[in-house]
Amino acid sequence: MFAGHVGAALAIGSADRRLNAGGLAFAALFLDFILWVFVLLGWESVTIPADFANTHQPQFTFPYSHGLLASLIWSFLAGVAALLWYAGKRGRSLSSVALVALAVFSHWWFDALVHVPELPLVADGSPKVGLGLWQNMPVALAIEALIVIVGLAFFLIGSRLSLARRLWLGSLALAILVFTVVGMTVAPPPPSTVVMAASSLVTILLVCPLVGWLGGIAAT
Ligand SMILES: [Zn+2]
Image (cartoon, rainbow, N blue to C red; front, side, top):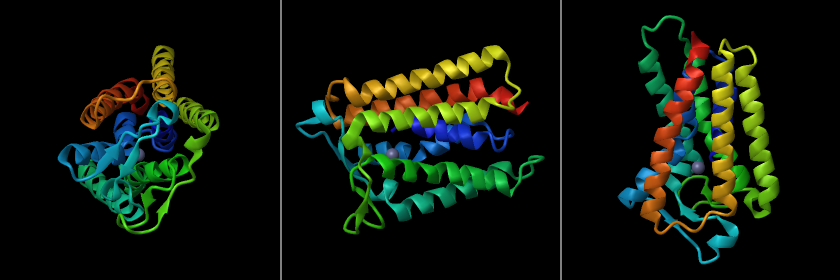
């Protein structure tokens, strides 16, 4: 799931217009960001199975980025970082900090919806959860599209964005959704896990500033 996390970030952004939408998108994708960093460092692993061309589902061992306990800790740390970032900035409140932490934590719940049971509650040996919606890809992608559309609608309704910005942000959300659907349906297997990790990191680092740039005017 990629687009769905951005959709969740936009929905959360509608609750506090002073928060930067790109920052929230990065918060909502943060667990994946550290996953791919940890994969490159060899601390977590991803396997591309032989039937990837059919399933488009890599297999993950990711207790430090996607364990429930780890997700709670990362969300708390993101809240602390937001608290320090917003210290002294007028109008920012504890609720702003809580929304940043919520954006990070939302990632785990949406991932738990689609992944097979591979998200550990604590460490790698502990029980793992996952509703496995990706086993029924059309339904999973329809729900992800719905999350994006609802998140975008929440964000745009009541924002002060110009019509042009609305159209650009809507186009970006659509492009991210198409990118996600292609990645989960017809994209060929990545040549290696290193390429997969590096390209995923680049994607996150490109998309978040774009969301922030196009959606940022909502805060003015
Ligand atoms: Zn994830």
